[in-house]
Length: 222
Figure 1 (cartoon, rainbow, N blue to C red):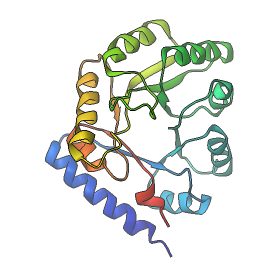
Figure 2: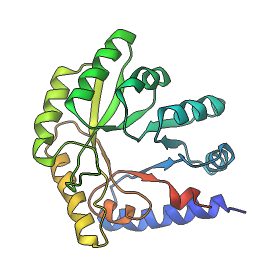
Figure 3: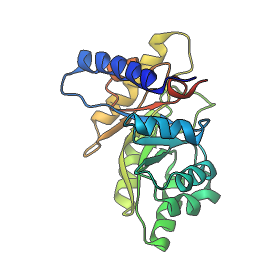
């Protein structure tokens, strides 16, 4: 039987140690990535005071949001968003889209937001590891694209950046991808959210300045 309270207590202790080493004034938020989790597991973490949960697919997000609508949860969309799923996502009114990966997608979302009369908070995804398998804008294009979206889109509201750490055994390569994203983040005006770090690299992400973590297997792995 999974001891949910012990898992999240262990996670928080690790986060606190990394956070204080970075700065006592630094605030870090956890998004529990529940893509493979049961409704029961989410309920258990809610009982442990976890409120923010993230899903990779719009359909899964819809099912879990509706099934748990009696709980005051904060839902995040963290997976790649297909253009044909934009309307479905907007109807769910998630707290944050982590995976805005192009100007083209931003303009399509903005158009749908205008049609539906809704707003959407989002993070621009940066492919800071330069990996073909990853989505996102290239680091050298990030500031220009972020500026274009901010100036052009009134209903799609950028809040900061997201990246996935380099897929590498060498910790220095992972760190390099985080540092690249943090340097870009620091050059943005009014950006407040830096989503970096998952179950295997969140301590390194915090050391590089992350303030939003996407934690899945650490919490939900059987």
